[in-house]
Image 1: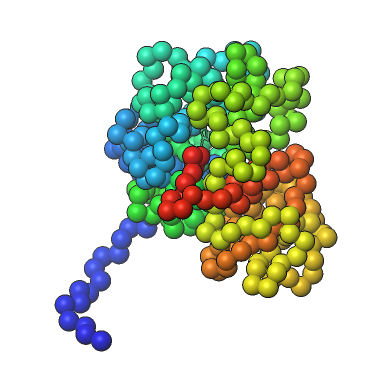
Image 2: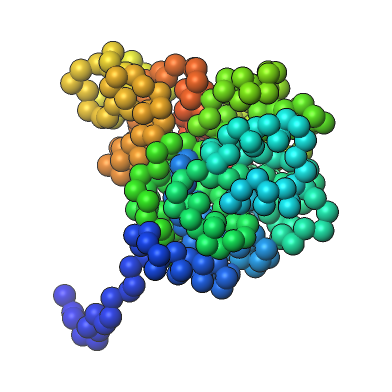
Length: 346
Ligand code: AMP
Ligand code: MG
């Protein structure tokens, strides 16, 4: 092996993953003001943040993720009063925000006119998605920056969402100026998204906050979005497995409703009835859906990193947060268009 022209390693590249302290918070704020991308933990998954008022910075989110420009972003703010600077909250929206914020609920409300936010965040729609995250580090970041932060999940479009700082580094390490480390996300699945058709609340995406809890607060059943709703809502309207949009997908294929692993497969098990002695991991040996949600993406990352071709997934009860887990598993298992990661959601 020739070893000419080898350059001795020089200064180490600065660490991308930072413990969250005052010093790193100051760096985040500076990066955001400079129009750079930062990654930070929330109680759902890690977010890829940019100053929502900076058109170029917001555009770079779409570029970094490979996200289609018609897919709008969630704007993270520090409190409801700030959210009301950008969107109109009717009585249902106010009730939900008052009860669940800070928390894993995103509200899609009519966008106010002439707000100082990049039009890209709404992808040209007349609505805006707003959320006040509960995670302490995310809250401190929003306080320190004192402005709206556009932040989708910090993954490449269509691939597994990140629930640990290392997941972000692996997928987007070359795109972000820094990654704030908050350890594994406690929720582990994206926020529940509620929109409004007129004043009827509709479920745009099941998430970590169970629908039953939302319905209990507003006192009515959530509707599913109309088929002819705005384009961003359409991928959520799934009436048959064939219509599923591939998303949240590992490299490996997923075989759903498996009772055991076939030769060469690894098992993503759930609950105490999992077959014994099978290679793989159990999302929650005691059968706790919240624990399963928190482990879902991390375990999919783990199994995928082995290079296995197929992951056999046990059935998950379709109740509470199980609805969101099954939504993600169904999308991860959906057929993928050849030659692309082929996803409309990210
Ligand atoms: P992510 O932050 O990557 O989990 O994705 C945010 C989700 O919010 C996407 O699925 C978007 O389609 C959805 N979203 C954001 N803004 C709107 C909006 N104005 N109308 C409908 N859906 C939205
Ligand atoms: Mg996402």
